[in-house]
Length: 602
Image (tube, rainbow, N blue to C red):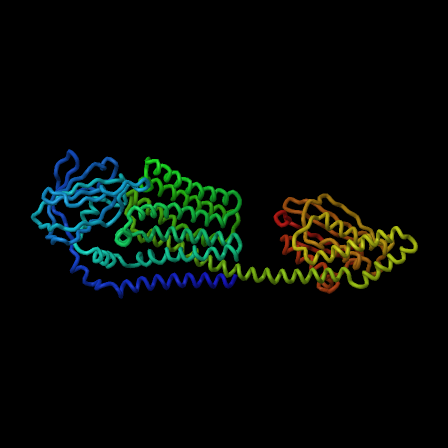
């Protein structure tokens, strides 16, 4: 486990170094980024606009054009603010629009009309696109026909296009955008997806070397990191200049949105139990089902993946909110402190998602950095938590290994203590005497003695819990020999109200042996040993008591004479999370009680 944790840390470190190299390389190997503003021209249009059947109005009065009623064509006419030489590239920022551009009545450029229709994304994309200038002067009349694809967008498509017209090389435009936008958000957009990808690549290692809970927790967190990081990384001003597939980027954004809510809720469910865990898992599956339903409707041509974006974001925020509420209920129910850092770090992520939705619905203006920082905070905290859990798991595995070794050694000690030479000698001497006086009883005694030895030998390799009836059978074999030896001075009585439970091997016989050995000390001749069971509200109670001589509990419990008792205590605690308690009064007797909870007896 320790080696796995070290490998994961190395992968995370490698992802950090790769991100740093990418960023630093962008500074040192870009071609003269400080001279971009001299070679790239920002072109403005001065003129007027109108809608269908409307009057021409100044562009300074241009509205945002939100809403379904404004899906009708928008016409713009005017003049470029400067001359654009022949063969120079003109780049325009398109946001889910189709556009035709004419100069002096002759169409020289169209966007979104020639592309082949796509079932999943109807829009030609959120993208930079351009054309080669035929030579346009400020005196030429420029006419634009623009049609919006969706009724709702995160920005005004018309204003965005008019404010982002550049003349120059595509590479120069990329450098210009990077020059303006590089900063904390740029660093986050590079590092977080790389971190998620590194975690996803590392998760198969945990499938083979870690527990199911740790593997699922790591895998779901890795999935959320990658999905949320992918969503953060999509900066259309930059990505569409690098990736020439705008529809793929749009589809990737929608997929990341749904996957982020699925992985977040699934990750939160690993900290839950009972109905809350089941409800969170169903909620996560429901979110994916909604996405599949939208994809099916897109395939039938009823909608596309991006059109119901407002609905999609609402659904995913509801899923996020349900997961957080379930975590709160789980914390109130169990008081598990490991839930608290997950809960506290998920609240900013939830608020960031809500604020992003409000921005999309135009209720408030939300800076993107708010949203990205909230998700990045959650991802960072969860990564730290997981690293801590790996370390704790490694320490727990080492402790478990030591405990397993101690239990094995204690089994050997118990087995040897039960078949020590004097017991074998006494049993064989009794059988020898019976061979002359009562051969049939001697033969029966040999059968019990063989079964007794076999059970003690089998206990060395037995790691599972065994039924209580098997322990009773072993106790009967032991007491059959003891009754023959002491000739009526030792009696065994059963008061069994339940037998339907499991317990560690060699639990009853060491307790009965202690009762025989110590109960008859101090001059006591005849004793009665009682084995009783009872079903309680939260588990089973097993009691082995005697009316023997008793002993001083504090002085004797640490002695070698109670090796079997201490070994039984360790195995009950480790194997079934039970408890063993001893009470003894000199001259009255001794009672040993074992409590086995319901969850520890299967």
